[in-house]
Length: 430
Image (cartoon, rainbow, N blue to C red; front, top):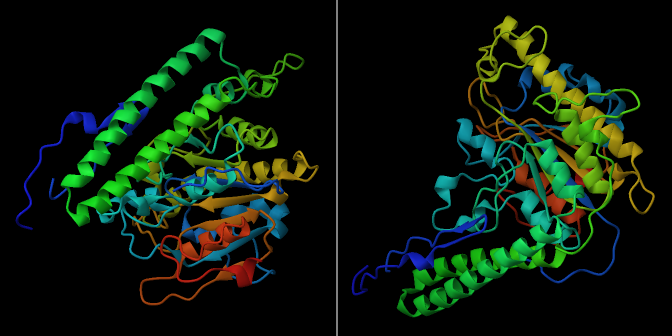
C-alpha cells in the first residue's frame, strides 16, 4: 500500500487496568447484549473438558441408537444414559493437531488464523454468557485449568483452580474497606478507559479503510471492558448468598477432612459448581482438567499423565491411563446426579435447565489428533438417550459447530452460524 504515511502509536493507546489488558491491533498504515431480557425460565450451561481428551478406544460405543452398550471408560454414566447423548465423528475442520487444539474446543479456530479478525476466537461459553449472564453476579465462571474460553475481543480468559478462592468469590462478602478500594480501582480504570476511547476515536481519521475495520475490533475490546467495569460496580453492595463452608472445610460432626489438592479436589469443584448454579450466582461455568505430566496419586499408576497419553496402544500404558479417565467419568457422573437431585428456584431439577457439555479439542492425545473429538451432551431439555455416529468425508467428520448452533438455539439465541458449522443437529436433539 502506498501514499499512506506511517504513524507511530504512543503507549497510551494500550490499556492496562486492574486485571485487564487490551492491546491495540497492529495496523499496516498506521457487541454484546447489555439490556436485560424479560423474565423467562432460567437456562444454564456447563462445560467440562479434560485437556488431553479421552482415549478413543474406550470412549465411543460400537452400536448407534438407544440400545448401545455404554463404553468402558463411561460405565459410571450408565444411570444417566437417558439424559445424555454421545457423538462419534464430530470434528473441528481446519484445526490442526498438536497440544494447541485443546484450546480450540469451544470455538473451532486456531489463534494463528485469526490475526485479521480476532473476534472469530469468541468461544461458545462466552457467547452464551452474553445471553444468559446479564442478571447474575458472574456472567461466567471459569474454573480449573485449560484456558479454552475466549472473549469476543479474542483474549484467552484466565481460570481459577483454588477451591477456597472460588468459595470466597461466590459466598464471602468483602469488607467495607475492600469495597471502597474496589470502587477506587474501578473509577481509575474507567478514567483510563475514557482516555483510550478518545485517543482511538481520533486515530480513526488517520487510518485507511482496512485499518478502520481493525479499529472497530478494538472498540469491541473497549466496550467489553466497559461492561465488565459497570457490572463490577453494580454488584459491589449486593449481598452474596450465605452458604456453610463445609464443602471446603469439612463437617465438624463427623471430622470430615476435605482434600483441596488436585485431583482430589475435583469433587469439591463440582460441589461448588452446583452451589453456584443453585444460588443463581452464574448461569455459565467451564471447568477444565489440566494436562501436564503430573503423577496421579492413584493405585496402579506409575507414569506421568502426559506420558500415559502417548501410549502407542501399549496395553500396560492404556491400563494406567484408563484409571485416570475412569476417575474423570465417575466424578462427572456424580456431578450429573447432583444436578438431578438439586432443585432450582423454580423447583425443577437443575439438570433439566442446564446443558452440560463434556469433551475436548483433542481427539487422540497419543497422535495429537484433533479428529473424532470425545463429546457428550447431557440435560438442558434436549432429546437424549442415543449414540449418534456421523459419516467421515476424507479426513473430516461432522462439524462440532453444528452441535454448538443447536445449543445456542435451544437457549433462544437466533443464530444459524457459529464456528465451523454447516447446519445444526436439531433433528436429533430437539
